[in-house]
Length: 163
Ligand SMILES: C[S@@+](CC[C@H](N)C(=O)[O-])C[C@H]1O[C@@H](n2cnc3c(N)ncnc32)[C@H](O)[C@@H]1O
Picture 1: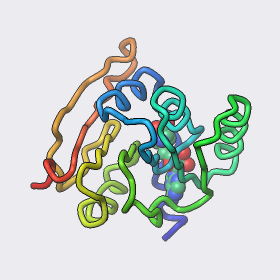
Picture 2: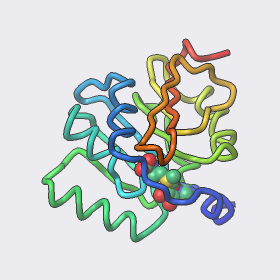
Picture 3: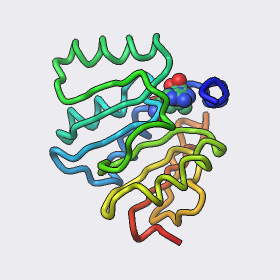
């Protein structure tokens, strides 16, 4: 199971301008808990910590990316970001204020039931490029990164996004 998911979700970093807008849309407050499931090089966590003072947790299974993220976090002297080498499908999301996602449609399908059942009211979910099934987006935005790709951003909030 673990291996299957790992194979299915490739590493593709969210461009910084897209990550900045994803965060802006969720209106993060100082001290809120932000979780990035499959955090890659930790860029979203680093921005959320430095720009908004969020407490951040990332889940990642690729050792090289974890090392890269930890190196960057240490070199910037950031103290409120933690990265766990753990399967994102086993992450505790019950206490999360902001959930950031850049996964595949299939992975989002697996996660959506847990998002609905386990995340608390008031939490925001922001997904890059793919919709979270069974939720109704509050907002959809498009960002054209210099003609290379039109990135989509889907913003959800509970309970407003419940169908
Ligand atoms: C599309 S990348 C997104 C990276 C980052 N969130 C961003 O937006 O820049 C997806 C990430 O999920 C990680 N990943 C894939 N399967 C995973 C799993 N089962 N548990 C934790 N991380 C996983 C990949 O290694 C990859 O870094």
